[in-house]
Amino acid sequence: MKNIILVILMSVLLVGCSIGEKKLRIFKLEEPRQNLDLPKPTPLQLEELRWIIITSDNAVEVFTKMEEQGLDPVIFGLSDKDFQLLAKNFARIRNQLKHMNDLVDKYKEYYEPKKDDKKGE
Image: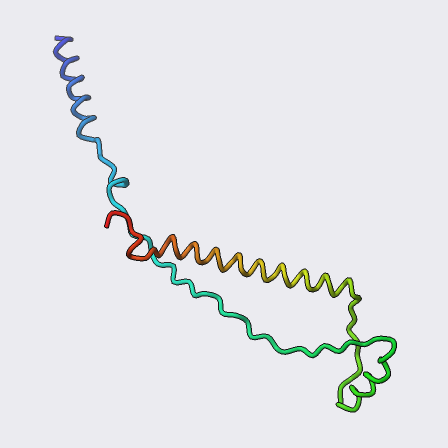
């Protein structure tokens, strides 16, 4: 009697495991990537600046001309080394913007491949 009950329990367990098994469809279905629809950044339209170089030789002349034009003769100064640092900072900003544009292009290439680039066609 014990052998019969043991055989019945074992068969129920084995059948129960095979019925409960579900196959994952994760590897069979390929979901298409969603379009990012990221617009490319547009170039900035910056205001045009007018640089005035003031030296010890022309300071009085420059201030006189500025007063004649109705401008307040105020100086925001940079030394030649600080001007070089300013130029380096702008170069770094341009480099970073280029890097970010390239990154957006790579994302678009990955998420929105051209029809010719799709595999299996």
